[in-house]
Length: 517
Image (cartoon, rainbow, N blue to C red):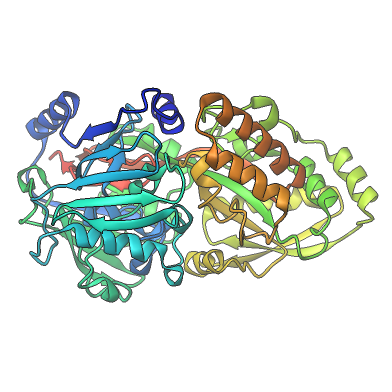
């Protein structure tokens, strides 16, 4: 997000009687972009997408890798953050009014939205969705933000009144990744046979491990600007096979190529690079298990990791080495804090000796993603150099997501790939490795709860900057999660397709994608 929106989220209105209002209309820039796309777009056709991860229809309320391309084609959210301006813009919400103290909000919904069943969306569906996000049984990452909503009541069919337990300027982070679900069919989403949303495309069929087929929804309120007839998402787990599929023309958009192949292919005639969202690659520790119950050992691992080598060899230089879990463009980011743990293997050995640890062996859970496996191989060699023996326990992404949700990774250490698009104030109450209560590392302390509360409660620029600095210092000292790098997500499209965009959270938006010939 841009700094302007960050600041507005964090600063209480200076005029106490003022309210924040934003209309959900389309800007002149958006209209110009749309007109340009319409002029060059080929109507109809099927876009074929390749990704390594299978769809996860049980996880639409909580970001999942398997849903990164389909979710915003089938579903819509109340608002989205404009990736150019950093300001929230309406999607299903037509307008909103935020109270000056950020403790209540009135939403006005669009009155022309229908689910794919043909039923009109109403305020009851928004309230139902909020309740499902709040329900612990659904294990939704943003539940900790949603739990701050004390009440959600209908004001007619297209009005929703929200009251918050505390000031909640980061509510737009919740709206961004909370697709509005159909209360009549939500219970059927899990098996993937009946998935009903409000987006431009309907969920037609899903063959687990094979492919997902989406089709244009003719009843969409703006169907004339939906150019594709169909979207076919194929699951190709082998990056080499995915590369071959793109080169042959069988696939027009590839999500899961290796970083090297992505950079190489995108530089060739007929292909283009697509950047989206952002992620933090981290190594986490279960602080209840030896040897990581000792913070000196955790700090030693920090010094043992050659982050620059990982950035160069795995990411091809398209990433930033950092010991902090935030993008370096985050307002208040302190480069000195981010560089606190440089590659110093001798210092790592000294800390291990001080901790009385020599030759410890342990397993590391690694999601079955080429990037994660490649990062582990370098980490493994780094740790071996300082006397620690790590072995990989590679698990499927579905198994990995379940372990994350259950807060039980099943090993003393684990590699994580976490979205870092959220503001720090939202991240520390939603990212599973950062929350103060029941994080993946089983780390807890009164001091950590205190710095998290201070960060989420800061409402002025100065207070936010100080709270973030204090949080970072404590996070770096305790070292229960070890950020390695942050990066944008890279994918490749053929020149035969255009109009692919992404949300600020990194979900791919195929809404207005089109074939060019």
